Amino acid sequence: MTSADAWAQSPATALLVLADGTTIEGMGIGATGSTPGEVCFNTAVTGYEEILTDPSYAGQIITFTFPHIGNVGANDEDIETVSEKSSSGACGTVLRADITQPSNYRSRVHLDTWLKSRNIIGITGIDTRALTALIREKGMPNGVICHDPEGNFDIEALKKQAKSLVGLEGTDLAKNVTTNQPYSWDEKTWEWDKGYHKQEAAEYHVVALDFGIKKNILRLLADAGCRVTIVPAHTTSEDILSLKPDGIFLSNGPGDPAATGEYAVPTIQKLLEQNIPIFGICLGHQMLALAMGANTVKMHQGHHGANHPVRDFTTDKVEITSMNHGFAVDSKSLPETVEETHISLFDNSNCGLKVKNKPAFSVQYHPESSPGPRDSHYLFKRFIDLIKEQKSAVATA
Image 1 (cartoon, rainbow, N blue to C red):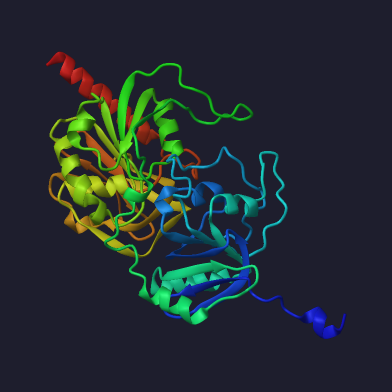
Image 2 (cartoon, rainbow, N blue to C red):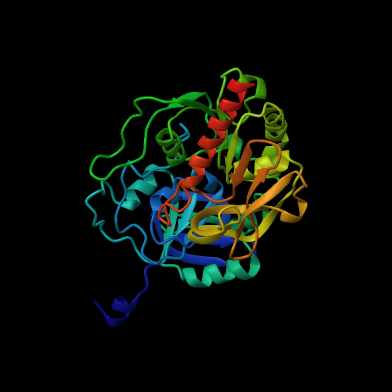
């Protein structure tokens, strides 16, 4: 081997091409081929498997700011996707360092193999700090991520494709990740060395409107004593009410809330008229706000990570939360019938609300995640308390 051979750089086997023509070279991992998406960054240090399978990330390419991703491998227990549409999470991922061999007793498969099974394209060897700085300066760009082990790319065609992408504004992605058929849920949360276990009895019946729901939300509802029936995003209010729910849950999900709201908002407005307790998370929060007459806006860089401080005005406490949203409720558009209950301490954006004359509330962040580690689990108890109060009021009427 000559000195020139020793210093030769391997040809790129993956590219990330942005809408402005920026072309980033790296080494490919995971699935092969190409896919378009909106490029965002996530600041979480752990939980990459849960993040990549969160349906709220549909249509997005995730740049992890933490440099070492994949070192603890992957397993079947940490997947958040519930829907039978197994590829309903992120479509691509961008990593700084190569994936090492996994070192964790819970690991069952190398992350590269896992990415292939999920049809997720990845690229490594990227200066993720520079890419994150670009997103913070210019906003979340559209782009195309591609992986070819032979390194054969038509860069001009990829640039043209990236430039022509419409993006997430005006796009309803909930319809792509929601369940096709109603189903029931009875699995409770994970316990150390025991795994997940089944619910033995349920006191309340909650109907969850699935815009891209995560497993751990359902587990925490089961922990709280709820029998959960999950229904598709387009389910009518009449069909939901026919199930005789004690409470209604509006789930997280991807895409532009205004687009999803075209069919979901009228349903939620009719449900509000019934005075049945309603709890919304993430996209569900935005749906409730829209149903009350507020507006949503596209954020510059979004909130994606597990270190976001949120102030709850109802308790005057600060929670460390997990977030994943590129749209937000416009606080200035909230009507007098709605009280703002939570704000982000990063940028003062709206993170929670409650309806003043109805048993309904919601939050923008993900209380089912555990970055605090359990700062926000009280919200599930708040939902159950509303159900109890409403049932008691009906019984004594």
